[in-house]
Image (spheres, rainbow, N blue to C red):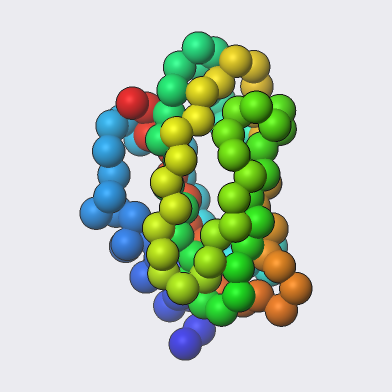
Length: 111
């Protein structure tokens, strides 16, 4: 299956899971990763939802580290959800592990 097809499937999987007001969303190839600095309000809690369609896994990390929990995201169509609380500007990085392929879709919703 092509990365384009995997991207569309990953985005469709998250569309049904949307909760709260959508703040930011996107999809990237696992080989490119996600590197974003979303504009979020201090003192607010958000729900981050990710899914990866393909093979292998990706590693999710936050800066500052106390924003959320570093997590492995398997590329087996599982959905990973995590509440994040913002106290200052954040950076979200999701990088594919060696040999991983496919697409990662993600969304951040206000709770």
